[in-house]
Structures are given as C-alpha cells and as structure tokens.
Length: 95
Image 1 (cartoon, helix red, strand yellow):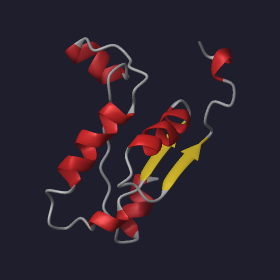
Image 2 (cartoon, helix red, strand yellow; image 1 turned 30 degrees about the vertical axis):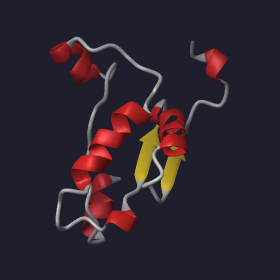
Image 3 (tube, one colour; image 1 turned 45 degrees about the vertical axis):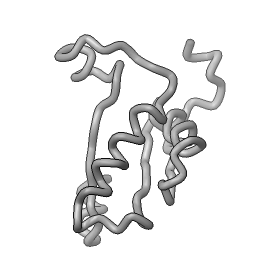
Image 4 (cartoon, rainbow, N blue to C red; image 1 turned 120 degrees about the vertical axis):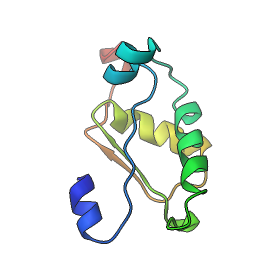
C-alpha cells in the first residue's frame, strides 16, 4: 500500500508502536491500548517536515491496526482520512 501511495505523489511514513514485533524485541516495550499515545508523536514529527501538508495527514491500519487506527483518530484530531482495513470487529474475540 505504501508503494502505491508514493507512486501517486503522496508521502508515507511507517512505524511500529509498543507491542509490535520489532519494538517488542529491541526495546522490550509491551502493547498499550492507548494507541493515540503512539500516533500523536508520529503526527507531531510529520508536522516538522516541510513537505508534509498538515491538512492531509492520514492514518491506515491493517488487521489489529484496523482497530487501533480509529481509536487513535478519536483522540488525534489532526488526521484526515483514517482507513481501517480488516479491523477486529469483536474485541473480546482477540483478548
């Protein structure tokens, strides 16, 4: 998805938050439910970049990220649009 977005002239940043594989292995940081605490610093960073349009910062979450992205957007109001792809529909089923 990121490559397709780049090919259309838009910017892309990818990251892993607490509990994601690389962060868990290298930083020993476990998962947090408050995903807005993860997304807000990423948005803050993007706003320091001159090539980023502050009104065009979106968020895309796949799988479990498809559940976390809308939660982050509920708190981080600088995002537009937000895409949830294959999100978890019943949280109790994954706990």
